[in-house]
Image 1 (tube, rainbow, N blue to C red):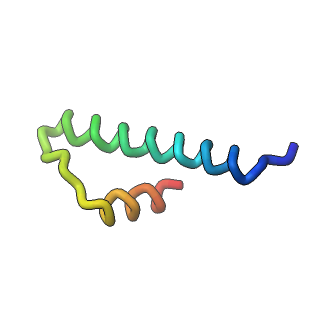
Image 2 (cartoon, helix red, strand yellow; image 1 turned 45 degrees about the vertical axis):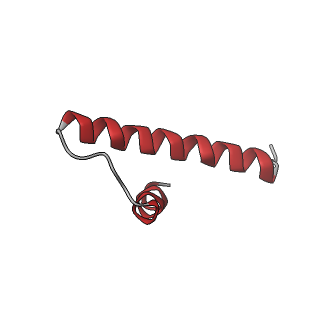
Length: 49
């Protein structure tokens, strides 16, 4: 099955959202601040994809 680049992007965006949401949940659970710089999020997401 071929994936169109657009579908692949959507899938990646969804994965990023899930990763970021998990990160936020984890930080809330540990009472840690939930503010991140854009670079931090990009790095974190890229490390988890």
